[in-house]
Image 1 (cartoon, rainbow, N blue to C red):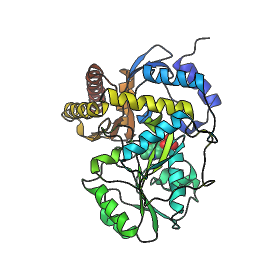
Image 2 (image 1 turned 30 degrees about the vertical axis):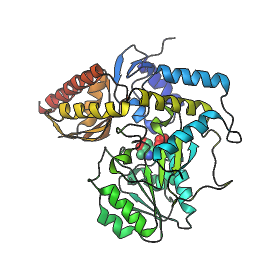
Image 3 (image 1 turned 180 degrees about the vertical axis):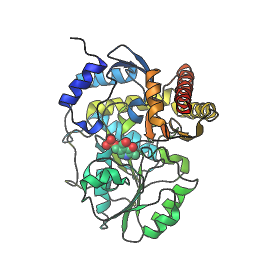
Amino acid sequence: MKYTNESNQIRWGNAIQNNYGVPTISLARGKGAVVWDVNGNRYLDFLGGIATSILGHAHPAIITAVSDQIQELSHVSNLYMHEPVLRLAERLTSFTGEESARAFFCNSGAEANEAAIKLSRLTGRTRIIAMAGAFHGRTIGALSITGQEAKRAPFSPLLKDVKFAEYGSISSLKRLISKKSAMVIVEPIQGENGIVVPPPGYLQEVRALCDKHGTLLCIDAVQTGMGRTGEWFGYEHSGIIPDIITLAKGLGGGLPLGAMISVTKNSPSFSVGDHGSTFGGNPVSCAAGLAAISVIEKKFLLDRVKKIAALIKSELSILPGVVEVRGEGLLLGIVLADEISSAVVSQAAANGLLLNAAKPGVVRIAPALIVTDSQVREFVTKFSRSLATIRERGSQ
Ligand code: PLP
């Protein structure tokens, strides 16, 4: 039997929980920044598995790394050492520039933040300050520090001792922080909240406030990490050094992998028995992550990301109906004059371009870091056409 986008919707509805709704497109294969659905339609993938598939689909370096690794050693648990986890930990901790940095590996962003929450308890303090609008994951701990009421409300009571400051406002944080605060957690750019960029100097001031109160500063770089913003970790543009970093998404080069890194000497460290994860740091995901890092380095993708971002910003910000293109590197929010992002995203899919409606008036793009110049041109053409179609329809 040949499955189609339409027949797979029925299968999904009959077998999978409805937490994502029922998607309309059923993907079959991909190559680089292009994917094909089961009906044979081609799409330019400018969402990259929500900022995750940093080298796109079927990258030869990932295929080789994963195939070689799985033939050698697949899963062993953390009762044993192996080369990929050691090497990846060495690379990541060296990127922080701090000799005291130590990694804990898990499988997702939510788990990385759970680890950070637990680590912060080792200070002897329990209070956490997170940001309104923030997204840190869906598990109970990560949800407790997620500043989006609609996601939290059905699952209360959540963790106590969490307060939300206004994102980007130092005066708001000042009102909440005290010597009883264990940790402040903040995204360098709020991804799920619609690519919200804080004012210049914000992270430096957050760092100074945390220093003043002996409070840990955790940067959630799950969405902004692994080169996406043109630096390894999204906070680096600010020059600060966080006490803790959380990572996932691009970390595994498209495979499931998360990490919590205690960076500075201010941060406590886990002792034997404090925390764990069966799959965390498994050889195959770590091998894929190492391959991704190596390609980013060899192809100078951090510089390229910055150049592509500048090009996209200049091309899109002059389009009628676009107010602003905000964000850093290849994590960009196209702010529209009207709340039509869902319609634009559907129209773009019909035109063979995958995007995401992060907010009613904001379209998010987070393509693979390996997008080619011609794919960037194709994106600009298809996006402009999709936006124009929806605006014309609205004016009729
Ligand atoms: N933190 C941030 C900043 C995120 O954007 C996300 C996911 O979108 C998460 C944490 C949660 O990651 P995961 O879905 O892997 O649990």
